[in-house]
Amino acid sequence: MENRLLNAKATLPHYNRDALQARIVHLGFGAFHRAHQSVYADILAAEHGSDWGYCEVNLIGGEQQIADLKQQDNLYTVAEMSADAWTARVVGVAKRALHAQVDGLETVLAAMCEPQVAIVSLTITEKGYCHSPATGQLMTDHPLIVGDLQNPHQPKSAAGVIVEALARRKAAGLPPFTVMSCDNMPENGHVTRNVVCAYARAVNGELADWIEANVTFPSTMVDRIVPAVTADTLDKIEQLTGVRDPAGVACEPFRQWVIEDNFVAGRPEWEKAGAELVSDVIPFEEMKLRMLNGSHSFLAYLGYLAGYQHINECMEDDNYRRAAHALMLKEQAPTLKVKGVDLAHYADLLIARYSNTALRHRTWQIAMDGSQKLPQRMLDSVRWHRVHQRDFSLLALGIAGWMRYVGGVDEKGQAIEVCDPLLAVIQSAVNNSAQGEARVRALLGIDAIFGRELPKDATFVAQVQKAYQTLLEKGAKATVAQYAAAL
Image (cartoon, rainbow, N blue to C red; front, side):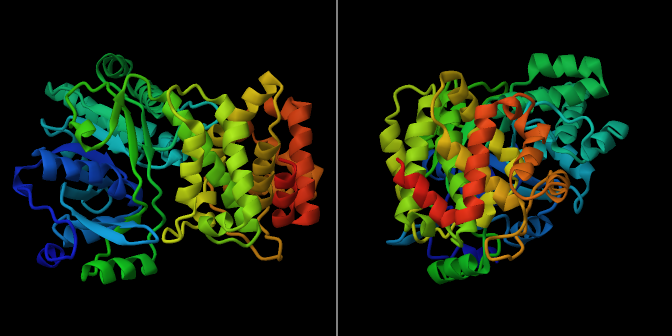
């Protein structure tokens, strides 16, 4: 298989792969990581002689991804999709591929304890941090954390694995590594530090002190639209390259990476591949989470309810396009602290990216895990608007759209497959409340999402109730049209 991929019609890894060292252990070998961080490393190896390679790890799930990668001598294809043309790159920076449940946890921990390892990075999605999105704190009652605290030398959670690896490095006299989150969360480095240090303190106070003093947790902002891989995606990659690649992934041409420059054991020269190294990532994170991810969630819930399966279909509806653009500029942009960025241009660029007909980014995919996403994508902005007495009607509509979606039945009476780590809590609120105002109140009562204060804010509750009632009476398409007409 290796030789076949190395004969693909694509940009190939002509650099000496044997010279690479697995200096980064990455937890979460999913589509986004393959299309984003690995591509930066591949560019550095190909164009700048970098020796920074990856040891790719999946802890829970994704066994087939790792198996596919191993079958191909750790090579895989990244295809960039635009309406005009597709281009492909075979990425060669993965030195090893491991799965905790296939290769054994000890093998993973040993890889993390190799002397050359300088960074452990993560793309484990928001729910992988076992934290409360409303507070950013470790959920000590999370089943994975409860299990790990009972058996800390055989952990299953990402926090548990990182702490056990650091404990072993400390005991062996090895330097610590930097822990770098690449997930879509505000202050993702701060959240990671909170979770790791809280878990470590529950295991061993002295170890926690050592981690707090010696390990850094830089924040990052990552951006590239990477739809879930489908059979159709793989067919198109095969047509493009001439090679069937089950580990292949497709994405948009755009990519962005803003990184807090705070590393204890060195780092690649990512800036040579187009990344921005800054002292404070938070303003960039907020910009992306609120303007891009917030409008994406808005379109996902309200688009799905209207029967639009893909984001580009939402963009073909002028009311959805106008509402999303207004959400970005009128309700999200005013809440931001970022300096030196033309936010109007950024909003226009986002609309253009959403309109890419080649992407076929499913509304259902973006709608997943809403309990983890709403706090930073919409609720933080609502809080800003309440303090400043500003209009937030589109944000209220987006929140109402989530409430209508998690009701589990669409406008045609068909079941919606709701995927969420808090699904049991959400279903309990839905099943024990009547449709309408009672439903809104029941969902607002989920502290882990909405916190304690917002549900007591009469103006906020009234706006969400109004939007929800309109969705019930008119349906999503007509409701979005009504809100767009009022702009």
